[in-house]
Length: 131
Image (cartoon, rainbow, N blue to C red; front, side, top):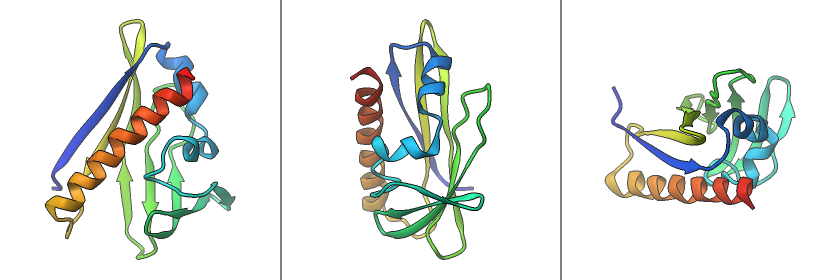
């Protein structure tokens, strides 16, 4: 098992409407700088981009009625990193939750850096959808 932390942000918007507004992979670079530093381009069943540490390919969970936006990132070494991402109901609004798994070989500093990046990206998502 990998150590994990879940980070979230509350957004004053119906959770289903929020999910519909953000689930498309091509929208991720507008707020998820930790995922990609370029636009995503689709080739076959995967999306390709320039990640913070080099070229990456990404598989996304298909559109669904449950608010699941998981993605699987391959950084080129053949191993996929699972990134669970959910939009859930929080009263009349929504909660967007992302779980960070501490990968093998990731030291405390790298894990803390990724956690800060996630927090920044979740705030960017909120700004993106609330303008």
